[in-house]
Image 1 (cartoon, helix red, strand yellow):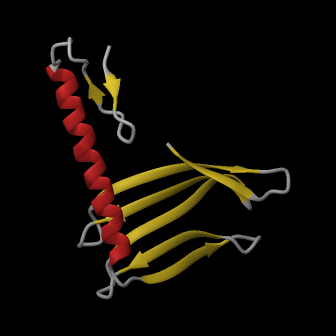
Image 2: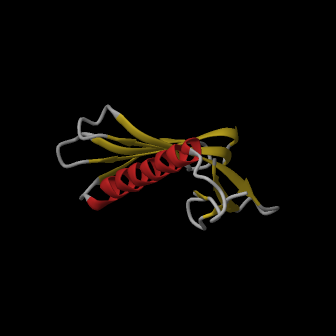
Image 3: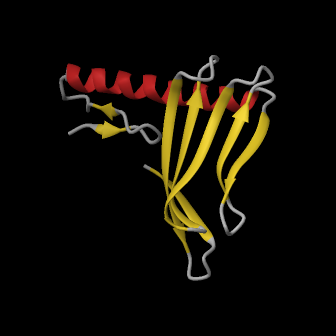
Length: 125
């Protein structure tokens, strides 16, 4: 039975196990995906971006936020959805390539509120 790394949960066979090439390839895919996600997220935040708030609901919550580059192309978009305003159940973040159209990564979070309707968690799905 393999051990796992702490951060990416990569499979690490014990000294007595033979390497399973499916596990090896799965590890490579996990590393590749983690690097792509990290680079894409840093790309959207490393630039000087303009912020646009859109679609204000009856509770003054903006349900869409866009970050655009100096040339006007979309770098990142965050959208609240589901639930009953102002307690939205989901937040979806989309990261875009240099053209502002090509989707590079998407992250979805489930939102949870306490008894006072305060946001207490955003859990990545």
